[in-house]
Length: 228
Ligand code: AMP
Image 1 (cartoon, rainbow, N blue to C red):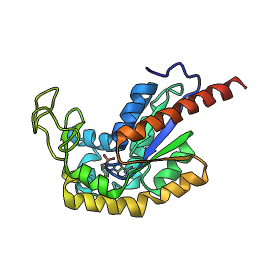
Image 2 (cartoon, rainbow, N blue to C red):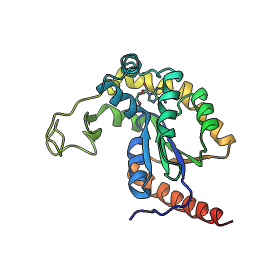
Image 3 (spheres, rainbow, N blue to C red):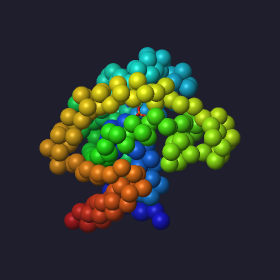
Image 4 (spheres, rainbow, N blue to C red):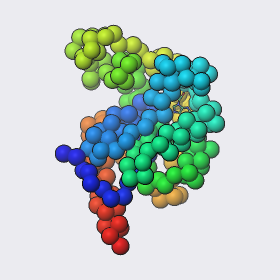
């Protein structure tokens, strides 16, 4: 069932360490609430596939688990958000990842909520190192808990799956380090603004129902505040 017909658009961020399930959670939110979904990682990867201007240098950062420079990221993501009509709700995942990005976004756009996925690092390591991706669609499989019907091939197209360069073990360690040093401090930034809502667990399937309930309540609150 979809929760549509909102009068005031909702702007949500999904945060969490790499591999915590931000993409899956955001896709479910888009499905259940008819929201526009923007993923900074997907924007960069599709830029690379289409040889966009920023893409060659971005690839070097992505492949080594480092953050793409703030200037590139802020203009890439904010220009996408500006294209979304004001009555459309959106969910943004993977951005912001630095304090500079957070401040630029906070001053440029209204944010209604920040959903933080609090997933233990051990669980994440297990997940990322078994992750295989169908590049052209972004569909993701996992050897352990979400395997494709035929190992190594996409269920829908039958095309081969690849392991993202940044899902290789040495890059995963670097991505976790980058997260702890540069992105985790943003949780305090959003906590201070009273926007942070954390959801803990090891499986998206058990975390998501709590997010769903929370967002339904948020939608009702927004509708009520609209009447006054
Ligand atoms: P993701 O798919 O969100 O895990 O992003 C994959 C990679 O893209 C990250 O490891 C970074 O190298 C880069 N990236 C994505 N979003 C950002 C961001 N907001 N700032 C800097 N780099 C980013």
